[in-house]
Length: 360
Image (cartoon, rainbow, N blue to C red; front, side):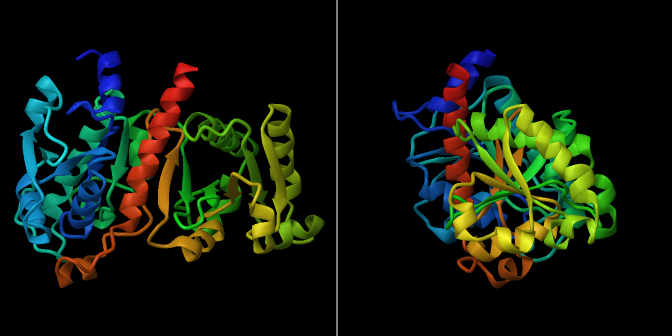
């Protein structure tokens, strides 16, 4: 299949004349809640989105039967997908690309020997998206420690996807499902707090603002995005008395961004910025570090929020929670798949918006 025809198929679906974006859904850590929430969300949204599950086919089939005997699953091999692409299946049948685990899965119990099969699902999703088979990628949570224990250095989905797509800089953004106007992006991600000030430079902040503004336009269809930016220090530095990062780095970066046509404002004190009267007209808040912005968003919408990676040459969304091994150990029906449903819907909407922007 050519790249153009594959891209068209990824947006239009291929069964019964029904238009459904085709998404790759990686099922994450097999011993966690990823397989369950992936199946439940994909099945619930099957008439809106064609979610292609990437994971161990036997495990997913067994999980589906326990959840609902009416869920139909059809599996294809990785080689078949690479050779001929996605087959045409009815709407009431979930497609699985089989990425077998190395060892039997016990819910709630990690096994490092299965770490590389989880990475295989990510690699396959990335390749399929870049080739145009998938309009977007949606990722279930994985266990970083298991992959590292398998002998592969792994910091997280965001960093891994950046490396696999040769993207020099990406931006992590979380969006609130219950408060869709609340989007929080991060200037730095998984860094020790002591390392954050040195990581915030004029150049990195400038690139971050360019990425946010560009993706809000292309992937969200927001013509003139407005970005509110926090300070790094308490009270945004208190005019230099509590730190000079605002004066020396953040303010110059904002002025330069404004000269490039980006509506970025600040820096604002983070302890007062997250109020409806400030956020109601904002499209995104840029926080300086992980625990400055994300606690607010997760308090507002945990379980219905999503994680979005900006700056990639593809669309990627994810849930806002982890593998929940404790819930997986309790059995099926305990985990909430609400965040996964929001992530799938958001990815589909972004795919449509991106296609419209590309056609304009």
